[in-house]
Image (cartoon, rainbow, N blue to C red):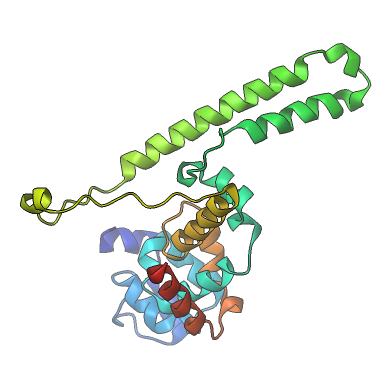
Length: 235
């Protein structure tokens, strides 16, 4: 977490406090304690001022603010394109654990473009194997991108130590979670996990800068949110 001096360099507190009619020595300070400040004054500030707090807080830090979390919840369950299966799989391929070979869909799209759209299709008879070659190249590029993304994800995974190593021998091994029975189930589970990670501020995306400060997403959605998380724990 950044130090207060870094906050003061990235965020000028005076115009924010002036807008609210607060003294310059007000506590909690927008620079020294931005999360606490937002918890108290989120509804009093317009989006153009609130966006400045993106420079001094992370999406995961802002998750503790109930109103921000509710905005993410409402947005995630409005079925936005960014969080649907196809878009989410392309944006966060390291989180997709499906069985099909990654890159095949992108390769098919490249092949179809070459066969149907390249030069308007007027020289289709001359391109020969161009579509197949482009498809293969695209599949290879996508596969490499996924491998690199998963490697980077693994490097950032936090190590969680076991609670009691001495009791390992006495405990029964925990079976692996059952895999989804179908592609449709795998896709549904993936999309659900993406939504959950989005709500908790765990995705790398600029959506947070748009959603967290959008007061049009405010509403009575807290009961629905709590019910959704209850279902998560029971599932």
